[in-house]
Length: 443
Image (cartoon, rainbow, N blue to C red):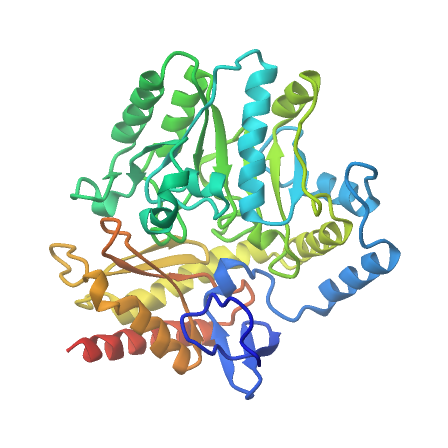
């Protein structure tokens, strides 16, 4: 290979992936890797599904592209109806785009359009949480609260507000920007809305369960009902970022389903097409959709929004999830994976917490269990764990800076929902072995 591609890989010459099936990826040298990360917590239905490729080819053979300003397509209209039956909203409408960051940008503009249509043009403020991740375009990055990602671009950021992370494990620690109870978090959000000024806040955006930045952290009991009540009281739209948690990842169709929350706007991507096609969408409740339409419509668009082949792929993935009961499988296998991890890692001196729902499972690494002291960033512990695991054929997803914005290491596991029991055991064993080897390397 020429190496003329900007690489996202940590190694200078990443292996060349040539095929995949189920939970396994194979490189050009014939080496197999167990994909315990589902790529970037993307693959739900498993790699190598021929029926998805066939649906893709069939749609592309009929019509691969028609600009959304001129046409709609049967594939797109059919998908909107089918996915609407699973969305936790009344009479939803979707705006399809090419991925999670575009979907978040769309949701931000959608919230603004709805408030303007309501006659609330002064509502320009959007609030999210520290230690969150909502995408890498400038608007989505500004919304995000992950400091290491923001740092190179801070001069371009600053239009959005942030409140504390819902992170009980590190609540109140210096630099964590975290609180641990629903009452504290709801009161802080209420105060932030009031401080912004009367009728100034347009929307509150949050992940139902925090994925990449904190490692499958659930909010404290009562959190979601409490913050929804605060938002409703102030006329603030609730936006659920389900890019990582949607389409069965947490053992429910959407993460907010665990708390019976019905957001005004919902953002999805990743699992919607299980990685087979770049795709995402922002969904508006029927009330928000009708408000925007009555107010003159939605000024927005991308060249590859409303893409018919993407819709055909998403429709086939949705069919497979339903036909094979894979959302339920995620719940059951997630419980099995956590049990295996606790068997291998409970009491391990470097494991502070094991958490998550469904097949979104996080393991937080620490230098001192009792004090929850993180390893310093300079130790690069998580990089060593990921590298050693990969050398032994196990792919992990990781994060850092979770403890205070600089230090902290997490492993995030999100394998395909078709992973077998034997493969789940390999994940738990492989993580333990990679962690021990990495710690031995640190001395």
